[in-house]
Structures are given as C-alpha cells and as structure tokens.
Image (tube, rainbow, N blue to C red; front, top):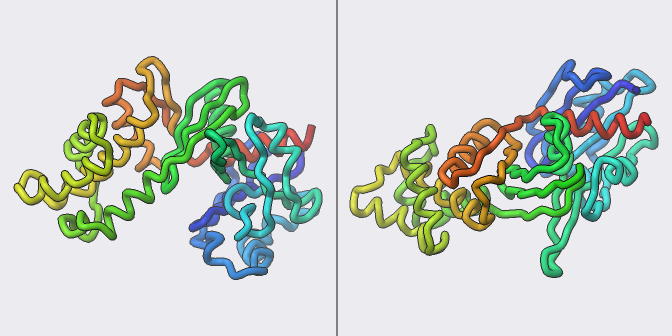
Amino acid sequence: MKPLIAIDWGTSSLRGARLSDQGAVLEERAFARGILTVPPGDFPAIFQQHFGAWMEPPDTLCLIAGMAGSRQGWIEAPYCPCPAGFDELAQRLAWVEPGRIAIVPGLNCEHAGVPDVMRGEETQVFGALKLLGVQDALLVLPGTHSKWVQVRGGRVEGFATLMTGEFYALLRRDSILARTMPADDGELHGAAFDAGVALALRDGGLLHHAFSVRSLALFDRLPAAQAPSYLSGLVIGDELRSRQLARDDPVVIVGTDALTQRYQRALSQCGVRAQCIGAQAMWRGLHEIALRLAA
C-alpha cells in the first residue's frame, strides 16, 4: 500500500494526518484554513504550504474528505447516491492529480422527492463501522447540521440532516433569548441541560418550548449562567424527539467529545444506549478507502 496522507478539509478547518500501513496516526496537523478562507484558485497553494513536505515521496497517496469537494472547494466531487458503501466511494473519487491526490465524494438521498446531502460525514460513518467491527448501525454525527445515518450490510441506506447546531446559534445570538444569556456559554450545567431535554421531549415543539428560556428568566427560575445549557438541551432534545427512537435501538455517536457527551446524556433520558467514536473515525475511513484502491 502507498504511503497515505489523510485530509479532512471542511468549511472552517483543515486537518491532516500521515497514516501507517495499518492506519495508525504517525503525525497530525490542524489549521484554521477551512474552504471559506481560501480564495478561488488558491487550493493548490494552501495544500502545498501545509502538506507539501508530506507529499514529497513520489508514491504518496492523498485522500481528502469534506467540503473541499463542494462547488466552493478545490474541485467538485459529484455526490454518490445511496445506498452506498466503501466500494462506491472508491469508484467515484474525484482525482485532482490522477493516482496521487483524490477527493472523496459525498452522499445524497431523497425524502419524499426532496434531496438531502452530506460531505465528509460519510467517511466518518464508514470509519466508525470499521472501528466498531459492525455492518449495521444507526449513527448520529452532531454538529452545525446533525446527520442521522442508517447503515445496513455495511452500506448507507439513507440519512437525514437536522440543523440543530445552526438553530442553537441563531437563537443564542440573534433572538430575544440572547438578552437573557451571558456572553459566553461557559461549562455545561448538567441539571439545566437535562431540564431542557425533558421539556423538549414533551408535546409542544421547539417553537413553543424555546420561549421558556425567556419566561423562566423573567420569573428568576433560570439563572443566566445556566441558560445556554438549557437552550442546548431544548434543541438537542427536540432533535431526538423527531427521530422517534426505540429504547432497544442503540445509537453510535460520532464527533467531538463535547458534543458526543451531550448527545449521550440526552439519549440516556430517552432510554437509548449510545456508543461514542471520536476524530479517529475520519482517518480510519480514509485508510479503508485507500485499501480498496490498493486491492
């Protein structure tokens, strides 16, 4: 197998890792150079600046996942339709330099004639499956746009996007609720978060429950320092309510520690068991795609 450079190039960040033949991380780098910071035409220069030294061995392979394959990225990697697995991704790579640098395609599916898409999360999903040694799973990848992904037989059958993180940010910064909150979120307040989740799981919906952030503050029943945690519980709880999860269906959470801990805590209120997988899922997914190419 060729030496592998794995890149996660998203909207706001750029991460890279040199991987061993077995997929172990030999060296890792991270920069605040997401695609939104890169002027048109400057992707090759930014890549060379940050990872050029890693690419010096002539037989090195670089696989890039994420928004670098969007229309605003380096080159567009057309979406791969679901159902899809590792083999479909490997067959549809968008080559920047044939045999040397390639971008992993995202996935697309449809709900009642309306398209849904993901870029980058598909690689994390397949990496998580390999790390767990499973072929069937329900996964959630929390973030600005959370993704709920159903996998059967090692193939993504479908997924749904929920704008949970973005709704939190809008309410937190730009609504009347912002006036009841401190400038910074601070540490998670567990009891306030749990109270937000519990209310969100009841009938009423987020449009109604969100106003409780203000009304509780007016009656001195929600301290300002706890309000961000309470609001976070409301939006995450509403996300979980919409998924109609069964108690005997375990969920795999893939993401950063801060978010996976919140989702695991919220899922426990629903009586749902959860496993957490961190950043290594991306590197494992890219390594597995490289193995498919080598084969």
